[in-house]
Image 1: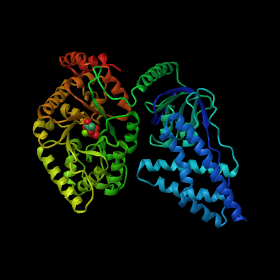
Image 2 (image 1 turned 120 degrees about the vertical axis):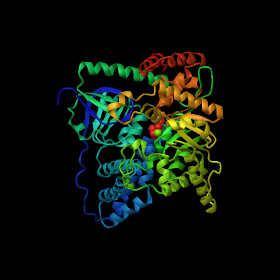
Image 3 (image 1 turned 60 degrees about the vertical axis):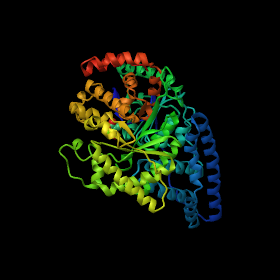
Image 4 (image 1 turned 180 degrees about the vertical axis):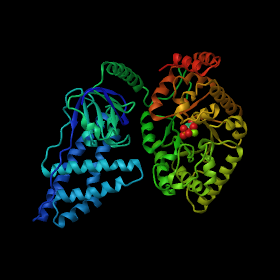
Length: 573
Ligand code: PEP
Ligand code: MG
C-alpha cells in the first residue's frame, strides 16, 4: 500500500513516535494433542515448565520494576502467581491424569479463564483475558521448546505493529529503539497499555486488523496523544508531527519535576489539587502523579456498558478500592449522574425530547429511589475505609438536597441496625452546575458541607448550548464572559457563607484559565489525571498580582473570542 493514510484507534500511551514498521504476526503453535503413556513424566514436564516460567517471569518483573516502578513490575509478577493458582493447577493436573498432553491440558485450562474474563461486563476484567493468553503462550513455548520472540534488540526507530502484544512482550521493549506501538486490539486499561505508558513508548490501540496491511519498513507516525497512526506521511504531515514531537518532549521533561510535589503558587500559596476519576485505574494513575485526593469519582463507570445494574457489593468493593488507593486523602464520590447523554439501556426509561433538561443526575436518583438507596448504602459502607465525601449532581435547589439527605439518614439508620460500620460524619456536597444552583448558592450553603462547580454542564446551561451537539459546538465555551461572571459569583457566595468550594469541570484543567480561577479565589482544583502535572506547573508560575492584572483585562473584554484569545496569549505552561 502506498500514499498517506491515517488509522484511528484509542490513545494507549501519550507521545509522538516516528519510525519504520516492523509487522509482527504470531505464529500458530500447531497441534497440542499427543498420546500420553507416562502420566508421572508428563506431570514432571509440566511442573518443570512452571518452575522455568516463574524464574523467567520474576527476572522480567525485576527489570520492569527497575525501569518503570514496582507497580509496573507487579503486572508481570502476577503471572507467576497466576500459574501457581491452585484451581488452575488442579485443572491442568486433572487433565494430564486423564492422559492429555501437558500442552493441551494447560491450553484448555487457560481457555476457561479467558472465556470467563472475556464474558465480563467490566472492561478492566475483560482486559485480564490478555494476561492469561500471555501466560498460556509463554508456557506453551516452554513446553514445545519454541524460542520466545525477542523484541529486546530491535533497530532504533522501530514502530511495532501487531494484532495484539502481550504484557511480557511489551515489558522487554525499550524506548531507545522502539519509537511507537500500533495494535489492532486492546484498550487503555490493558496491561500492555499500562506498561507502554510506564516505559514512555507512544502507543495507539484498537485500530483493528487493518494494522497488519502495513508493508514492512513503511514509514509510520504514532500519535499516542490523539490515538491515531499515520502511514507513509507526506512532507507537510511529517513536519507538523516533527514540531508536535519536539513540543511534547519539552513539555514532558519540564513536567517530570512536578511529580509528587505540593501544589503552590509562585508566592507559595497552597492550592489543593485533586483528580477526577472515572475508574479505579484512574485513581491509581492519579496517585502515581501525586494529588491531594480525588475530587470527583464519576460513579457512572460502574453502571454504563453493561446489561444489568451493579449490586451493593460490587459498588462497595469498587469505592473501597479507590478509597484505599488514596489512603488518608479525601475521595469525593458523586452519586449516580445518568440521564442526559448517559443512558442505562437495562432500565427501560422513556425517550425524552430534551434529555439534558430531563430526568438526569439527582432528579433521576430521587425518582429511582430503590436504586439510589442501594447506591448510598454502598458509598456509606465504603466510607468506613477512608475519607469519603458524597456529592450530589445536577442540583437545582434546596428541596432536592433536603430529600437526598433524608434518604441518606434513613440508609444510615438501616446500616446502624445491621451493625455495619460507616462514617457517621460523611460530608455531603452539591455540584453547582445549573444556573438555578448558582443563583440560590447562599441558601444551598446552609444545607451542604461543600460545593463543587461543574463547568461542563454550567457552560451548556448558561449559554443554552447542548454540550454534545456538533452543530453548535463552536458556541460552547467556558471563556464566554457570562460563564466567567457566573463562576466568580459562585465563588463569592461560597466565601460569604464559609463553604469550601472546588471546581471539577474541564475549565479547572485549562491552564489558560488558571490566573482567572486563582484570582476568583479558587483553592480546590479537580482535573483528569493526565492534567495534574500541567495544572500543578501552571499554578506554580502565577503570583497574585500578575494573575489579578490578567483577570481584570480579561473581564473587561466583551466577547468569548476576545477573552479566549487574550487568555491563551497570556497562558503560562
Ligand atoms: C461538569 O458538569 O462539569 C462535571 C464535572 O460533570 P460531568 O462532566 O460528568 O457532567
Ligand atoms: Mg455535570
